[in-house]
Image (tube, rainbow, N blue to C red):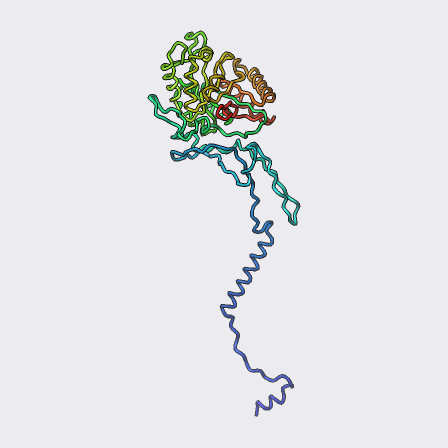
Length: 393
């Protein structure tokens, strides 16, 4: 009866509803909620990124044609120039520096564009293995390893050459000789001189193998200096095992092979003195024939009476003639004047060759001049870049 009374007194429409048990949220609902929130978060992050999932613009790189190097030993920890070329540039007609225009990017922000300059002279030479001789280019000699053409025709002149741009601008090649005579002077020259400067090692020097490795790992092209008879010999004496006019061809070839065996990884030889020897056809003939057989170049800086140009052409020897000695007068001003003359010659005929010695004054002056010459558009190239090569026409 009590319940009936209460029902009578309760306002209409407010009937007592049955009590329901509390609802439990299932684990599946929680997981689905978290998944939705995660998708929303990732989508927001992507939308706020500047370039969502956009592949970076590839830059085409052009490199000059380089000869492959056989790696015959484990590489050292020295840094390396990476010789990589994109297939997009395989049809390029020149190996020179290229200006690459990257396309303008569309988007909400301001337009963006880039110009990338690639100079092949800075790549292509693997410094980790530059000091390791190619076994195919070495034969055993009585006094040490001798350079020789490979069975496939490759020459030391090609394989050990430092890459350069291949452009037709004004080029200056500088050879600094006399390395390995003074240990401190050699160390300073390798450390200070730009890598584009060619280094000449004296056959009578010490620790040539060690210094060759240091020079090659620093990016230098190198040549071997061979002592040849000057006028007023022996009062003026280039040193032991000098090739002379009075000696037989066999004696001179023996002395030449001794000089060639002093180290490896060089592109050619350079005369040390030799004004009289280079003017004698009977003496120079066998020397040039030997260089041609071994695939080496000849850098002639002796005298105007030298027969080297004709004999080099006859024997297929790449040939370079020096234009001037840059440090005949050991004075900074005089050396700078000679270097400026080289620049003028290069602008007039396309290239010029200067020859100097590894004196501290010469090394410091050349290093400073090269830095400024590059800013004026002069390309400093290795000696092989200006050689006249009969095999290439």
